[in-house]
Length: 121
Image 1: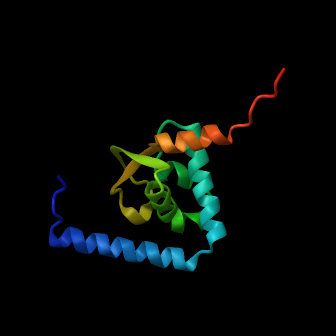
Image 2: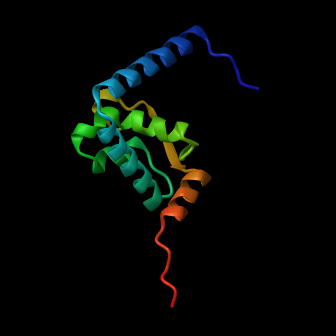
């Protein structure tokens, strides 16, 4: 059973959705695709990760829509929340908690399907 959100939580969620929609509108699909690919590949190389880890390896230009890219992969079932949080290292967030992610089973299956097949001996 899911709990009902209170008014403040609903407003915060709506505000977040509006900001993500604005970010998506301001970026082209190729940029978003590249950041999503970077997040997915980072997930292949690491058991878990957060936006902190990704900000360290992505160009600053992508930081604005990193959250949208992560959200898209989450909605697509490629990554999943670990139910863990770490403090954000972004100065703009003042250290608020951010999610820790990992590839989902679906993400791992996609990786396996894309892995080059070994040549028959």
